Amino acid sequence: MSKNKTGGNKGPYSQKRKEGEGRTCVRFKCSLTNTILDVLHQRPGWVEVKEDGEWDFNWCDVGWLRENYDHSYMEEHVRICHFRNHYELTRKNLMVKNLKRYRKTLEREAGRLEAVKCDFFPCTFELPSEYHLFVEEFKRSPGSTWIMKPVARSQGKGIFLFRKLKDIMEWKKNGTRSEEQRDEAQVESYVAQHYIENPYLINGRKFDLRVYVLVTSYLPLKAWLYRDGFARFSNTRFSLSSIDDQYVHLTNVAVQKTAPDYDPEKGCKWQMHKLRRYLTAKHGSETVEALFKDIDNIFIRSLQSVQKVIINDKHCFELYGFDILLDQDLKPWLIEVNASPSLTASSQEDYELKCRLLEDTLHVVDMEGRLTGREKRVGGYDLMWNEGPVYREDVSLETLGSTYQIPNTHLGCVNDRKKHLRQLLMPFPGQKRA
Image (cartoon, rainbow, N blue to C red; front, side, top):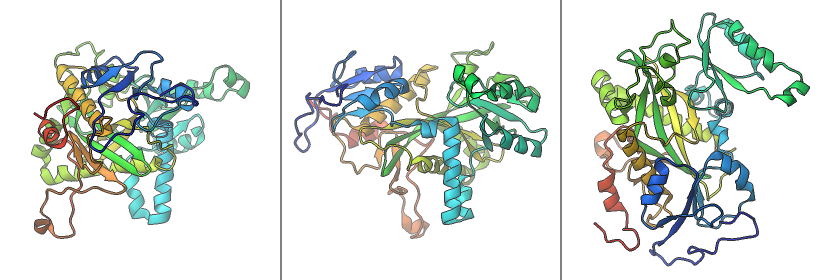
């Protein structure tokens, strides 16, 4: 990789590899200093390069991408951890805009029954541009609770709940300044969204799910779902009588860890398999299977909504963090999608989960060339979409009926990744198979 378009990377990959020959060295850059850097340092044959050194793999932040991507020449083997316009799915306003457009397209081309499969995001308006539409909807549901979120911020920053229009009049006043005034100080865009007033509670506390989806291509769409994830709990019992209390309503760890009674050892997370066991014990396996199938639908429909607008590039992949909220009827709602899900660990258990996730992400990206490209599972990842739905092979169709196929997803199920990886992967170059 080189910083100008005339240069090229003449490193160890410039020679064509023979069939089955492993790569012996991967030069990487990493702009983060958390778990991903640990994982990269521990990977056999991977060497960190500093500053302007040539690299083969770059785990960059979105700021670096914005400044450098269009001025960079990348050889065939090079990989980078974001698509050029990833924000089409990960900015809150663009995510909703693309989902609304996709839903309309489905209704026009496939009918209402297909379009309702996209009814998994709350009623949302972008402000200030859709302020008048928002006011019309607001007046149709007096007394409802709404939530305001800045479109491009994370970790709960700038979010507040409201029930009266006067609560946002000062914000709206700033949003209607003249063009000259806006040039001096640009108004920050927000989304106003119906607040889910009936969340599913465990021990009286609200939670949401963080689920990881890895996309290695948009054309064709190829997406992997990770088996592990977690539920993030609020530190305070849920109540609609205190809409100003962020410890009640925001489950972001960055918010919850500032609570006066937060216990860093205990944390505020459940592993996904623990949540799935809890829900199964309470509601039965059939209900929970249907719930997780609905969650799978959210991932696929969301990716399809941006498939035609994302700039596909064979050098790019994206690890998304989907945030899903369950209501008391066990309906899943998409809250947002993160292009840079937090890789900073909040506990030892969280650190180990993120190490597994990132190790398996690197296995799927496969800089070493150890996969065939036909795998349906790699470590904790299951291939859920490959130009179409992917189905499991380990289920007897004779017992279920010849037309019944089970999707190849295992969110919250057993993650026996080490055993699977030993069977799947050739040893790293220079290593013996265990």
